Image 1 (spheres, rainbow, N blue to C red):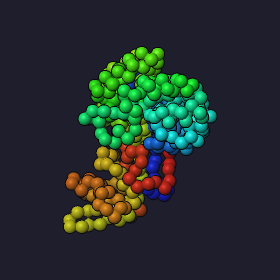
Image 2: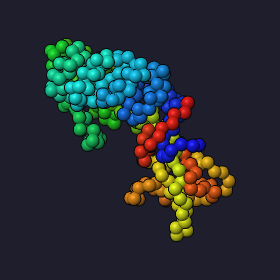
Image 3: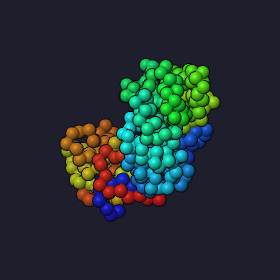
Image 4: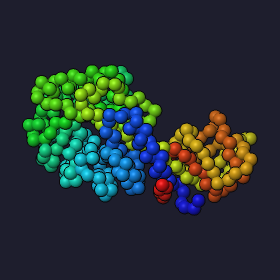
Length: 321
């Protein structure tokens, strides 16, 4: 196959199949594609035509989705810390769902998106919560008051947002239940529970997390990765200390991939190496992979299921239906 490398070929069929798989796993949920994973125009179009909702975290992502003809009521602005300009653009595009985690964000949103729907990002807690999941979030005991503040500012309190890993725990279920009860005492209905960044192979939201609320889930990597095919070129084939090294101009981030080449015939054990000076872009060093003995400089190697973003940044994208 001709074309510059390294690049990402996007298999739209596999990506849409992944969307169907997540819908089957979470049949009661409204699935949002997290555009940050891969903003390929034709990938966005494929998801839009499949009826998917979208999760945007920047003005650029919003514009990419709107250009696909997606209505604002199918878009969630999920970053709890956004610029005034980004919030205003989202409101202008008809977006009615915004994630916040502080009084300052509520006040800003009330100015630029009056009447907008608010979901409060909860601060994850508990020993099973990774530290990076605590970067954003409002303490659960303050969340009902923040929803009430949103209502007093002319916004529509809609519910809460929780990180995916934490959403699989019983601690999260109890916390959301407590927030729901305290919000109800203030006259606020927790209409939506949003789970952010659901990933393939990870635990799904715990049973009972949404309760009587509607469940929204956002997923990026788990939807884009199955359709990601990294295409790299062979730079050199080198023998070192009895081992065959195949050097590439780009390489996948994991060994959990299918590998195809433009050559056929007898195969030999090989180690794959990417272009970085450091040794952290080497695959199959412990257990060599069988590749054609005829592989030469300029041949292409395709990593299927390589993920939405390959190790080496692509300089060209090709989308396959």
